[in-house]
Image (cartoon, rainbow, N blue to C red; front, side, top):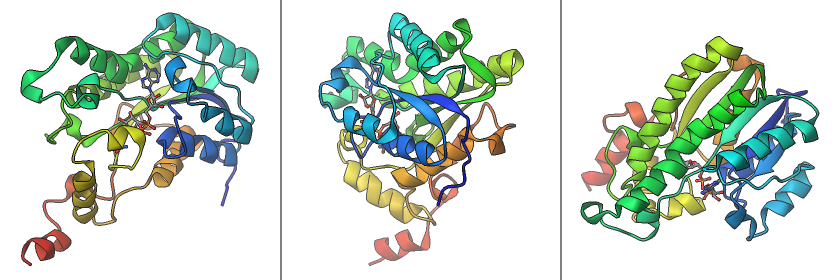
Length: 270
Ligand SMILES: NC(=O)c1ccc[n+]([C@@H]2O[C@H](COP(=O)([O-])OP(=O)(O)OC[C@H]3O[C@@H](n4cnc5c(N)ncnc54)[C@H](O)[C@@H]3O)[C@@H](O)[C@H]2O)c1
């Protein structure tokens, strides 16, 4: 059911790679709620070509941008404003990549060049997005900017490797830039800490299926799906969340505040 929550709002959605991507599901949800937007992804991800199907479904234009390139981001914000016919109300940063994780590099034998790449793509790029939005004066007052994160920023999870550090950086940027953007433009900046979700980025972590099943048992409501996350993002882009800023919002079915669950006790005592 649609509620028209985002009627009249304009935005930019980063990170839709295929139908499983959280950004893909978000684009469909935002469209249903009346929002209009441009879609963007790294030029290399465009080669898959799938994003064209989503663009058609959403009547959205695609503007390629490597989120680590300030020039690409400046072009993205400038073109998005032209295409959408005004300033931006919402931005979703749904980006993550670690060469160390992708190449299964052991945490005790990490490649530091790749580590810096992980930090740049998965953490610092959020600062670049925020700073470009400010410098190009692209945001409307009471806009909402979100990035997606994972609880491995705060607790250790084997095999999440240097992505854990990147997510800590990301969450910290949301607080620091959130304070600044609130004063400048009443723009809110938050991160959403999502349950394990079966996507390309998720499945790239070795042992992901075990994480997923464990989180399912440790979350009284179960794991939040990609669709649930898209609905929460729509709420966070809407006027119903105007005073929420500088937060790391747990969207995890109760995982983060569970000590142990009966389900897990039953399973372990078998
Ligand atoms: N899947 C999970 O279990 C899970 C859980 C919590 C948080 N998250 C986060 O959700 C976000 C979206 O991931 P997803 O699970 O939908 O996977 P996904 O693989 O579908 O999306 C990741 C996206 O990042 C894009 N990307 C990589 N490098 C880029 C660059 N240099 N510039 C621009 N874009 C770039 C990819 O092209 C891809 O579209 C990520 O931040 C991820 O860490 C995922």
